[in-house]
Image 1 (tube, helix red, strand yellow):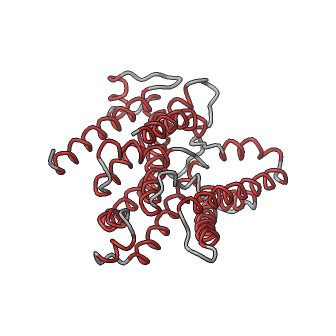
Image 2: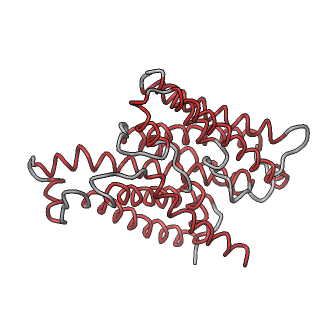
Image 3: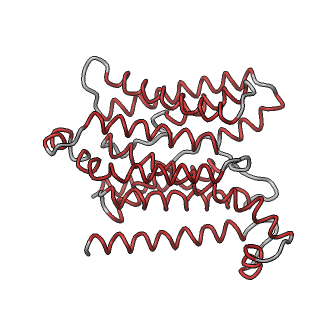
Length: 326
């Protein structure tokens, strides 16, 4: 099948999945909205259903899609850059560093701007520590990099526990819930969505060079790719994407790990296809997971990170077994 037709078919299928995910997220809840009610709430006169839709469900759905897209985009970039299928912001400790930065700003009573800036600083610090420690005195390997990331993630986890131990008891439950992934307090859905769109537009010009780099650094240099510049640009973009996702919804695992695998199995390794398709599938996956999280035990809500783990663990084990047997 020609590549252009494959791209069109893949994007149409994923756009359909995204549309269905949004429809479920906006319809399902304590007050169920049928198709006619949903349409009336979207474009009709002011009503209780319209208030519910525009003030509660739509902002949360946009946040869920944007955060899922950000995590999937960051995971795709890291797996391609490091040539390691286990790389993602959560496993490598980048999400942990961002969470420590955001949590520190939160405990100090600083505003949202400080929280976002601290989250980005934590993600960048984690990224720098990862490559400094993994490199050591010799060249790093993907296995060494992965193990270093796991240790850094454990270290950030210990710091988070210390922060929780010294925090006010009244704040404890909300902080713990946020750390497990919480979209109920997401406050900047449209800004998060704008960050996702801008991040994807910035990544697409790098797609061809990253695809070449995924076949080896020497081959990329021989073909004229500026590898150091490309690597640092990707690190910087990944840190921004992760920081925004963590600031908006806390630490959510498995989206950035599993989604690139699924898309890669379907369409191959060309990042010009892989990046936009991963964004759509990652956003749809987290949107569906959040719908389950807020409706499964209604009126009580579950952390969305728990749902992504329940989905992601067996799915990743299946993918791992499938790749090892092939």
